[in-house]
Length: 359
Ligand code: NAD
Picture 1 (spheres, protein in one colour):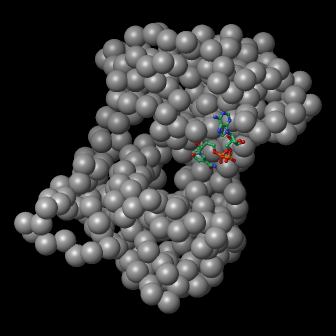
Picture 2 (cartoon, rainbow, N blue to C red; picture 1 turned 90 degrees about the vertical axis):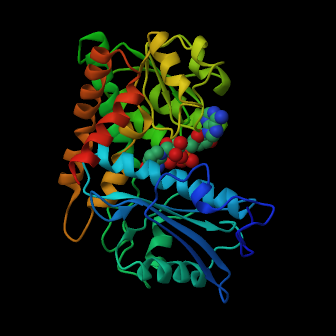
């Protein structure tokens, strides 16, 4: 679909937004443009039954308007589930800006995006995401009262909260699977040593775990070896290394028909988004006897910190809610065992149940 030209019924290309493969009853989709700054944005509000839609703004060099729309539709729906499962009184939404964050990002463009958000009068709350920093949010906030995680109201970088949530999730998985609380002596393969992965590694190290680390960035690996006495492994072998827990903290789609049979750990629990390459991979993990912590349940610490931050010190509240990720995962694990279903399916069910009860 070409969103830059008006679509007329009966033209050769029959796709419109409502027939789009990623359209799932979204409440509102806004296409925003500002000629002066060059802003092209799509804001997708998926579901506001639990409250105003909240979700980050992604700046990316999309190859087409359709690719941007696909991302906005998919990610906004993901935020509905993530916010519901995290117990937040927010619905799901997401914004994308079609631009190169390295070359095209200007204050005028960010302000124009703020104007678009403000026009939605609070139905959508924006925040940082790929290509957009917390400092950028301060610029967006010049034009809208609905920017979350700014210098004035926010707790800063959400990654430390994401790392805390992942650590709590790993502990919950160990408790469920190994029937003890102690991580000392367990081996964890941490793949990706960025903002979140390095933070998770630090928690694990302090809890006495042995670390196997991997990253495509050699300097990050060297730092982890020095700080945590970690053992390095090739990033492509991180999942098949001999470990008790595999902790993916790099990119998504790492759990698929090729990698799952190679995993030696009994637990997969990490921060990366969209870890399952397809729906069948949840079943594959179940069949392989691997306990999987659903990605959007375990990595919710960041959105919790962004959504609950506000004037005054909210750190304690955010920490409590982030630590509760462990309890949510325990509920997911128990129900998945009872119903003999993939943990991802149970996470979806729990989110859907909360959404239905809000009506
Ligand atoms: P980051 O960019 O800081 O770190 C990612 C790290 O992964 C980098 O060090 C990079 O070199 C490494 N990497 C990239 N490809 C790799 C590969 N093939 N093998 C091994 N390492 C590789 O990102 P982050 O903020 O730490 O986020 C990590 C993951 O967690 C992402 O999938 C992100 O979407 C997800 N996540 C992050 C947050 C947050 O608060 N930052 C919240 C929710 C989910």
